[in-house]
Image 1 (spheres, rainbow, N blue to C red):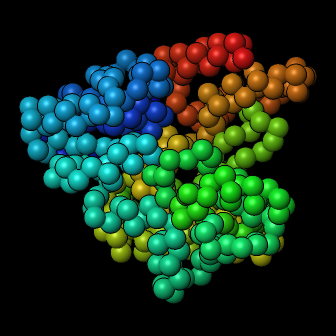
Image 2 (image 1 turned 45 degrees about the horizontal axis):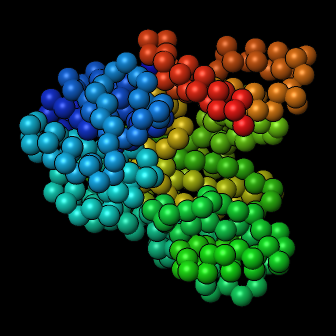
Length: 361
């Protein structure tokens, strides 16, 4: 199994145990990495998430209201140095909403600046004030917008808002005003952003220590359709890579950031201009790619097998066998997210679970 070549015990804390909030793909990555450094790993979250099926770690299934008690019990036994890592958006929301956690050894940090990084409008204002060649798409709060130039994107201002959608592309006036009326009480939490048509999706991601990126990658986030066998990330080797590395390093340095972080961009394919989308101060969905970052394998794409297999099953009428087999052969040369031969149940269990749900629909 490939691993990230960092001394996690030195970076996170000299304790016998570590706590991971969440049981999603990010938590599974952390569990497999950290088991080599800590004798006890506790995953706290909901049952049936992919990390729950791993043969590693101790799983604690509990409600949101019970999290504090579980954390205090573990830290009380192992000591204040016990690292507590928040592995996804839901648990980042919990972290920011609970001041008691600021006195523990929590990641990411510093606690006082996480809310700022997580607020897109604050981040956009910050970028406007620095001398940067990275540009911003026109962005306004929904409450301020009377009539945009279509098409536009609607998205949430922060990662912690309760959201009925992630992003919506709005192409015409009637749709825009229906949405504005529907979310009338949340218009201060929704951003209206101009839509870039001919674009490439790029992401920088890293583990940072006190503002210094210790392990970082820049990837093309490939999203081709129809779905299946084409959802992947691949190492970004284009002309803007140094610019991205410089810009992101300045962000984390100025915030003295410690922890996992992802910064997303769009690039105009016509003029190559970079636009900042958002910052996610937490582990990201394609985090498995980090362990390929210094190996020969980083020349190969990394695919999400779980997503692809489920998508193919749902759209099987669109995948004639003659077209599917040649594309499936490429799996053997790709890096694979989630899959590990020594820990197969997370992937296999979720595939069976999801296919069963699809058949019930």
